[in-house]
Image 1: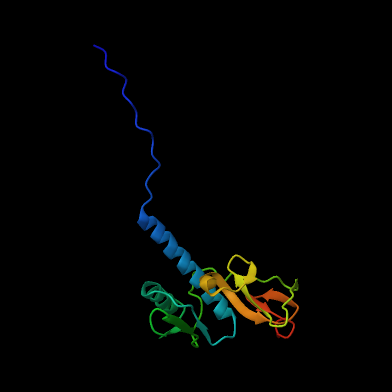
Image 2: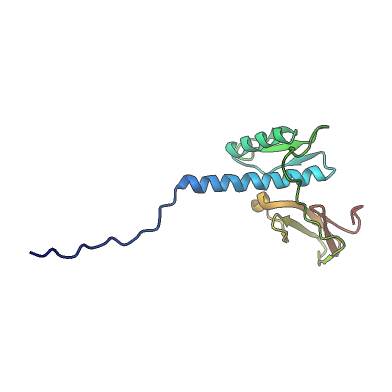
Length: 166
């Protein structure tokens, strides 16, 4: 007696482990904060006030701050609690890591029409310039209200003709 041919199961794509996705999101978050810290260290700003975030992300920021020799302050009440990074005399990027990769387009100018009210622009980590949206502040390297008719990107900052960096 002959057996019927065995049916093969269709191949399934491998299951994605939810912890892989969480690890990837954590790495992206840490990289975005490191980019913002490096931009902050290249500026003359005395402190960097980050957007509100959950306690786990705040803990990651506090750990990163130690590596960069920055002081930290937690400000606000839940759910608006956030971390403020404060420059110290020893603040610097950790040794053994590549230096900051700051966007700088040199003398290239970008014309804009700010209107009467001005435009609140954001310089994103990917180098794009968009209207600033608070919900996307974790992807923002710099943001400011601009009333000038042209801007430049210098050392990771949006600058206008009134600025010394122009």
